[in-house]
Image (cartoon, rainbow over all chains, first blue to last red; front, side, top):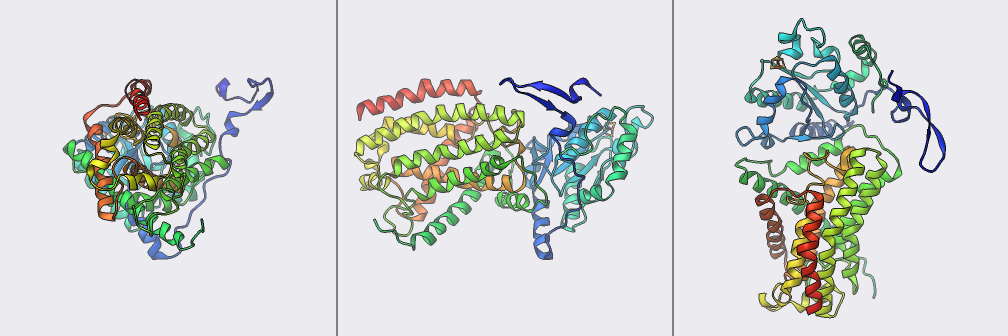
Length: 213
Length: 301
Ligand code: SF4
């Protein structure tokens, strides 16, 4: 573990000494729980419609596929007209796009970002690298199958997929959300131990708390 | 003065109209901005979908009491500003809770939300939020200065602190508007207006591409939904103040909608034409261009 993550005594500017434990102080210590939707079906359907019409993507490009996401903001493809927007912070986003290969180092960040998002949240895997490793299938430091580490709602295939394919993929995701089938956050909560075990299997220098929210 | 209870449902009605108008206007303005960039832009009902989605999120976390109160304060600022200013001149129904000294109160409310937000975002403990606050507060303060000067100049000119009186003094033709009777004050106030509308060139504090989104970095779900509601109300409320002080107020809803839209468009035109200022550049800009105008208008009044 890095020295700055150790438990230690710190002297504040006012001269008071206090103990800091970075791994525990700033994080929640409860695992995620399964969250139920609204009890009345029509309300939940309405929420699902709103969720599908307002996809806020976390602007976090992981692999070379990320370069195909930028054109979506340009006049040519203009994803805004489909209710797709980019948010700079995981707290406000509800869609995490893993855009291509994910090195183990990036996986760590992706997990943290994913866990800070609020339920319901969706994950889209972009490009063949997220499905089976793609052309990095024998690389020593990329993961091969994204849905062992994060609950993926939808894959968009291609190496790399065109922006049109992305738009079509997002439209499919909307259908899933409207049908109430995009419950990745709850899956993650249900099978939390399994996901954590998989994550820890590849991330050897696990120097973050288990729960990152 | 006797308080009439019927004012409360009337005020709620005003609020309802303004919230919806603000939501549609916001999306419409975004669409105009997109058209300038040759895009189609968001659908006109996008703000509603975003709002429902944020309310519909199932989890939320808090960082403490002030974190919770921040958006509440902010919304209070917007609603307060709206409710203590007569929305429709001469209408018993929509003059809301305005009273004799409401001009000063309105000035307070303009700042109130920002301060509440600063406290709330500060408690989130996120470094980006802290940076955003210090940048935001310094810019808003600089932008607010010319407005305060212009307001005092107008108050001196009409010898009153009641917004209703100021509006009634401007009735009887376009040439009676403060815009023509006290152009310097209006110019100073309009420059300040650009700064407070959170549109380019002065939106560096909240722009998503800058230090991630500034003060609201940590805000999500219902907190964010409250702030979005405020983002619909506050610009309209602020424009109502401007309209009443400088552009003759509005005597009916259609006139109201039209004037608010046109005043908003001023900031949109400037916004699509000019690139963003950095914070210290915009502060300097306000101090060099807007504040002297305000002082001059007071001296002449
Ligand atoms: S699928 Fe192809 S384009 Fe996408 S990250 Fe992998 S190698 Fe790059």
